[in-house]
Amino acid sequence: MPYETITVTPVSPNIGAEIGNVDLTKALSNRQVQEINDALMEYLVIFFRDQKIDHQAHKALGRHFGELHMSVGGDGTNSKMLADDPEVRALHFDANSSSVSGEVWHTDQSCAATPPMGSILYLHTVPPNGGGDTMFASMYAAYDALSDRMKTYLSGLTAVHDGTRVFAQTANNKVPISTHPLIAKHPVTRRKLIYFTGEVVTKINGVPPAESAAIIAFLDKHCAHPDFQCRFHWRPHSIAFWDNRCAHHRAIWDYWPNVRSGFRIQIKGTGAPLPA
Image (tube, rainbow, N blue to C red; front, side, top):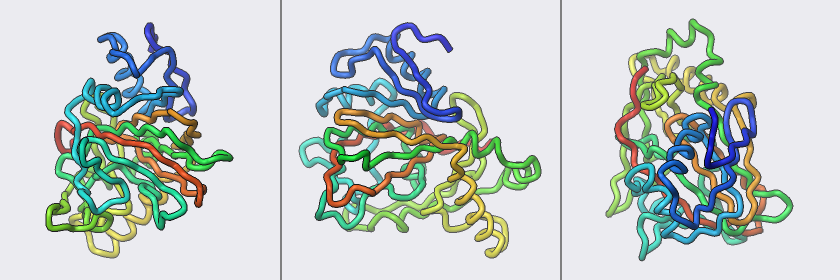
């Protein structure tokens, strides 16, 4: 796909591209927004370098693609809502941290009835020596790599996504539990994908428990295959913007006791995952 107002450099065969020739601290033209969206649809996750954005610029970028999403995890997560800016969540980890956000393969908040469409993470402080990378994986590629027999078997099955496995229930926040199709189709590209998050999927509906457990174990391993992945090496003032509907991601916590710090916003989804 030709791009006129931005540069797009793919980082792997199946997922990821670095975007250049754009300043996210300034207002974007309609053409720039369209081309950023086109790149996101084509590459699933896009990366920006040297973008020293504040919260207003961060939210303005997200609002080009939809309303901003409020985390279903409430206060029971490692990320923390800013008291004076609740659409922005801080992700700060240092020598006092006992765990970090997203240290397993997942798609954000799949336990929600309408999961977020996308997430935009900005890091201003990164660990030394290359620590704190984020890995991404294409669920299009994961689906395409299934055998025809497995595609047929999984088609039509649904899975229970239980948010209480990762988010703490609080008096002010009821953590959702939702049922979604295992094989979904993207609402824009219409491509088929595997919709699965191993850390919150508790069962596959309509099959015996032992069979359900075997499917979950298979998909957990299959979706994490290296062939579907790219790995983003953060530098200060970098941004990753991923399509939560078709990309998995995983944070690497190899930097303790060093600091990794930044902010994340999310964009509301337009509906539940669509069965393929």
